[in-house]
Length: 335
Image 1: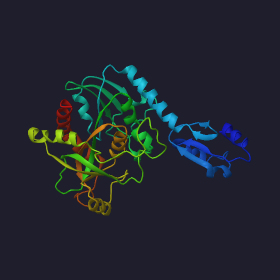
Image 2: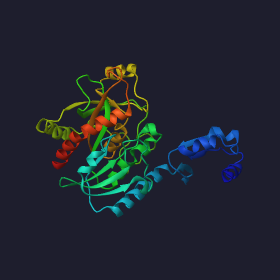
Image 3: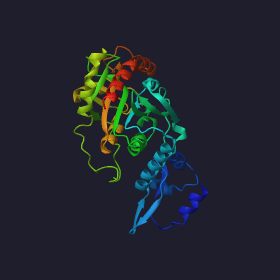
Image 4: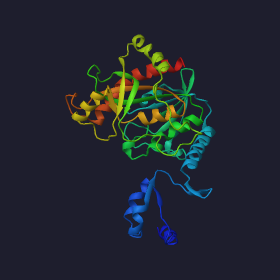
């Protein structure tokens, strides 16, 4: 902190901007060594950055840092990988049992991976799993990152960028969520046809790097029609309860109110959860083909007959995970 104070004392008479990470922001805001006059200039970013001067324009290193961090993570993983997955799976809350179906597997814990966030929610083991599902090489995230945990949007979607550099072309994203459409029942699977983003933010907000994707990516088919048609073949054959619908995202971590659910229903949402949309947006931006599968673990507030609990979500997700496993296996076999 003394070094920070001395650095800014040297900027006497100049405009000041303090750039810090989210985890250090609160400590800095309340630290006595930080002059009151500097507090209005505190700017929070999710990763450590530096200033660059290019053509007399001062830029932060955020664009450069993002790619460098992803490349470092991908290089580390490539050094540990002995498969070449073109399909990745993000496993939602309580749905990690799909990982048991992966053969010839090897695992890497998130905390061992450079620059990788670490899961904090029960039901998310926090490791990457590589191996085979059927005859296809796959990688699976057993544990994802949620906006409500305090992660920035860039951190939530960071693994998707890494997948792209690892050669992934198809992303299967799963979640546990609440049913709004009254034809749904806990234990049903729902293929995502579209989504409604009500977070008030977007995982692509910020400077754009054309090396990743275009500034204004199209979202006409956020969830691949080709993959949905492929997935729809299997539930009748496997006797799996599966429907289609629109998924809405709610920031959480509290469950929605009955009034909010009525509003979402009026907007056209069939189910609601706290994940999936940021990763799906990033995947579309990066040119990945996305299949979204939701597991209905409870009926939404105002429709459900009792109060919600995370334990109930985990229990239903665990029971439905065998259906999810069978469906995902069949789809990936045909890719």
